[in-house]
Image (cartoon, rainbow, N blue to C red; front, side, top):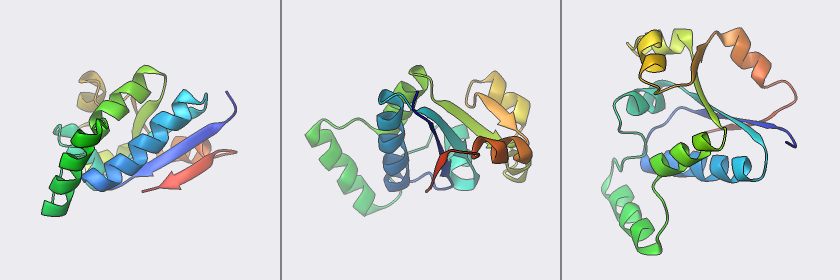
Length: 132
């Protein structure tokens, strides 16, 4: 692998999810170590199976265009990136602020790991970071 890329994802809408997952799967396919760090709206959407769903009329039109192009949906790209080794994590405190239970997210395999903020901070050492 040539390096680590850490994607900080706070928004769960179609556009934000598309941007994060399309870049993430590309980086993973190119041999990068990829970590997706979920927070707030993105974390809540992921937990309830709504990550990457269209939230507005504009996004619904974009989803239709993507389908016409044969482009995969964000959740599919996330699954594929994960199958290639990308990791999905979140901060323990953020999980609790969102009203979620860390152990449940791990047990249901929604996240690979719930980490402390110091561990997440260490992931950024020497990494490229992308915030969406």
